[in-house]
Structures are given as structure tokens and as C-alpha cells.
Amino acid sequence: MIELTAKLEDLIALPDEECATALNARARYWDEVDRVQPLSYGERGLIAVTFERRRLWEYIDGCHSFDSWMSHRPDASRSTMYAAWRAAKELEHDVPDLSGIPRDTVETLRGISSNIRREPEVIEAARTKSPAEFVEHIQENHPGQHIESRKPMKFKPTESQTSIIVAALARAVRYGAKDQNEALEWVAQWACDWLDFKGHELELEKAFQDLKTETIVQ
Image (cartoon, rainbow, N blue to C red; front, side):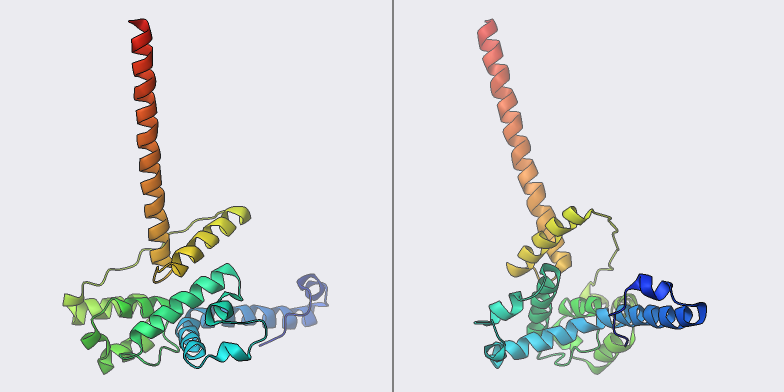
């Protein structure tokens, strides 16, 4: 890993050979971040469970409770930590070591019955296959589990929109959504319910106005 202390524009201004070495190292750094990030989920969950059970937060300055320690991070990281913590607690008796298992695979494991997910071949597949391949493995070898495939969705919100979305998802996770996918579903369902209610209010208001107009005409 390299340190990101140098400004990118300073590296770009270097002579060609030095620039090539510096930018190549920088690019490889981000390649490593992309590779490791999905694998950090299970480990974060194990860390959180350990912090909670051994009350390790008492040794961290500024933390007066487990929730305080969990909250000492940006909204996106906080929601990830809470989701990982719930996953680790749920899976600890069947898959006690989640480190190195991708996040999507961890969430798929949560949807598999306990007697299936503790099988050695399932755990091995979770560690060695991509999330999509793992879903296919379960569908082919354990069809009774009814695991759904995941379909990616892409959005490009503005910075201010992103802050609102992240905050909403973090709140949903804090109130019980098992991960950000379920959090998004909750938020979308709440929005649908509110819009349906608002639409019903508008229909009633229009009906009332129509009735008043009809009464005045008569």
C-alpha cells in the first residue's frame, strides 16, 4: 500500500518516468481498495460483535457505549457496520468466520436455512465463488432454498441528493433493516405508502371542492 499524502496534480507534474511509477502505484492502490472493500463486510461484523460482547468500546476515547462506538463514523460506514454486526450475530453458530466472504454472499447466506449454510461445501463455495456464482451454486445444489438472483440498479444522484439517500438508508438499517438492500426496499415502501396517502388526501380535497362548487351552483 502507498500513502496518499501527495496531491495528484503534483504527481502528474513529475517527469515522465517518475510520473509513470508514481501514478502506476497510485492506480494499484485503488485496485487493492476495490478488491478488499467487498471482503471487509464479514470482518467488520466480527469486529463489531467482539466490541459489543467484550465491551471494548470502554477503551476508546469519546465512546460511552457500544452504539456510541458504532456511531463514530460517517453515515454510509455506520449503516454498513450495523448491517455487518447483525449478519455476524445471525450467522455465528453456522458460519463463525465470515472474514474474506463478500458482502453479497454473506447476505445470501442469511437467506439459507441453518442446516444448509453450515455444510462444509456451502461454506467453501461462499469463500471461493463470486456472489453470483454462489447464488447459482445454491440454486443448482439446494433448489429448495428459493434464493433470488440480484439485479443491479444504477443511479447518479447529485452530492446533496446522495447525502439525503445515505442518511435515509442509515436510519432504516438502524431501525432494523438487515442491509442496505432491505433498507432501500423499506424506504421505497414508506415512500409509496406516503404518496398513496397523499394522493388519497388530494382526491378527497378535490371531491370536497367539487361538492362545494356544485352546492353553490344549485
